[in-house]
Length: 234
Image (tube, rainbow, N blue to C red):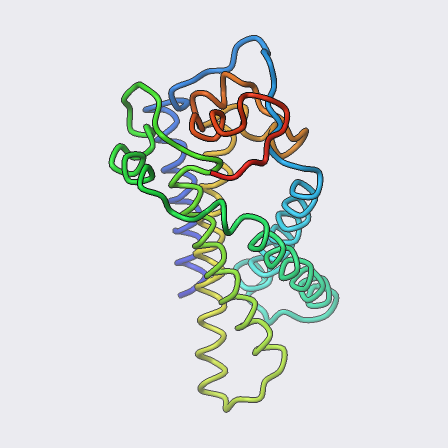
């Protein structure tokens, strides 16, 4: 059952992203010639994000290959890779939470962004957003909850100290929590690439085009003064 649900969920999420792109295209701004840049993420932030993403992709790949494709328990070298990636992901999650928890506090202007669905369903004009918009904040806190849940359940599976029925319940929590996390990351990757060109650049080189920042994070740009001293808080 989980295999079928996983295939439908992942394929359906990818299809919805494709449908959204075909219907609405990119959000409010298309990149033109490169203009002045604004510093957005430090080297430390980008490294932690990169290690966290690579560890997550490793966990998702090994886990779903075993459960969905092979339909066998996770064992052997795949288990070793999965376990090591789990520790790396756990450390990265803790560090990202410490780095961005303050920036991801919800503010009054986030309600305006939310009521208009961030402009993803059409409509022009700028929407108020600080260093992170309301959608990114929701993804961040969902990632914290799902990350802690999957890490805790995974550790419980590695150390089977409970009776078999409860261990089976923990296994299901781990599976479905991981599936929800995968779905949310698919949407996150779509939004950060096709839906919002220029976003990936911030996690690669650390800077964004000033025009991009003006359209996507105007309050943050005002806070930084449009200079290269980015990373300011809302």
